[in-house]
Amino acid sequence: MSSLFDRLLGRRHRGSSLTAKQRLQLVLVTDRSNLTPEKLQQMKDEIIAVISKYVNISPDKVKIDVEQRQRDSWLVADIPLRGMTDSSSLREGIEDA
Amino acid sequence: MAARVITVTSGKGGVGKTTTTANLAVALASLGKQVICIDADIGLRNLDLILGMENRIVNDIVDVVEGRCKLRQAMIRHKTMPDLWLVPAAQTRDKTAVSPTQMVEIVKELRNDFHFVLIDSPAGIERGFRNAVAPADEVLIVTNPEVSAVRDADRIIGLIEADARKLPVRLIINRVKADMIRRGEMLSPDDVIDILAISLIGIVPEDEDVLIAGNRGAPDPNSRAGQSFRNIARRLMGEDVPLERLDNSGNLFQRLARLFSG
Image 1 (cartoon, each protein chain N blue to C red):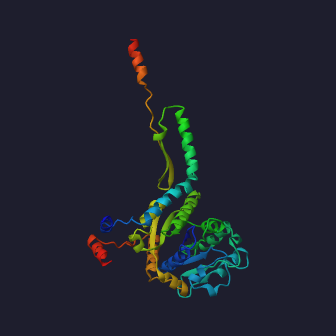
Image 2 (tube, rainbow over the protein chains, first blue to last red):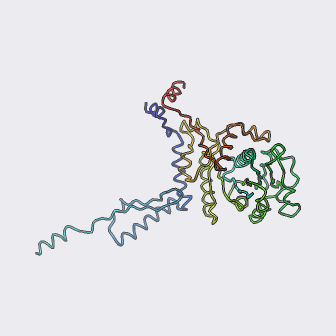
Image 3 (cartoon, one colour):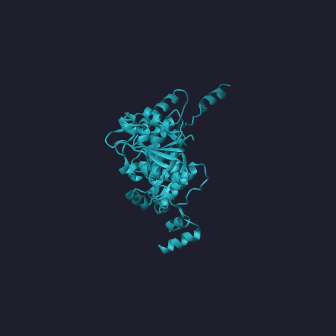
């Protein structure tokens, strides 16, 4: 049923062309930046280690990727910082008062 | 006249560089331009064959470079299109027989006598490619809507971007099959442009008349491919020719009709 609607609406990406496009986009990231998936993972781990020396972060929430914008490659990082305040130290201040 | 020197290259072999060079040359000549082609594929020459000039070669580009003849003596004029000339490659040598500097010198000699110098590049990224691009003012990249061709085109684009001259690069997507695109089994021109992110100058459909024209040594401007190449020639000359509508999907009603006709 869905393929009927797809054809009526002229949607073409049901076949292998979508796979081809996705594979090409992925392989060109490596081709252009010379960063293999392994090297990229290594770099991510090291970046997380360095940033952790300065601020608290949640490693599992970190997103670091190589993005294609036109013909340029960008290393893009989203790194949420964990709050510095610790509720127990707040309470200490109040109880002392 | 000051020539525009255009190199036709691709990275991948077999995508249609020679076909493109031959057909663009024929189209430009028929539009009143003086055109000379240079076959830079030394050792594997084919432009002479596709243009039907293979049995008139006396001297080739290596003879010129090695001083056995003047450039004028290696220039062959097309029998039926007097505005179209060819400097053939050598068949018994290889790409090391000519250097990029020598290519630039040869083209310099031609710049005042022609409107267009078209250079048919060999496949690859080595010496032959460098020879072909050295004298260029602009580059046309030919690709097919196919994974290997697009990947190789990307590499070539990268190499040309790294060239200090910042040559203008434009893309030709060749051997497009509208039906396969409609079925979602072939990369569309939009897909290819999304991936390669360079300017598109034309799309050429898969056309068996190209093979037939090669058999005869006579590029066919009236074939579907030939007409597309002519449109590219017109765009090269600055004319605003809208891109061919290869996906004739039409409106909803037409799509319905096709759906039920199987």
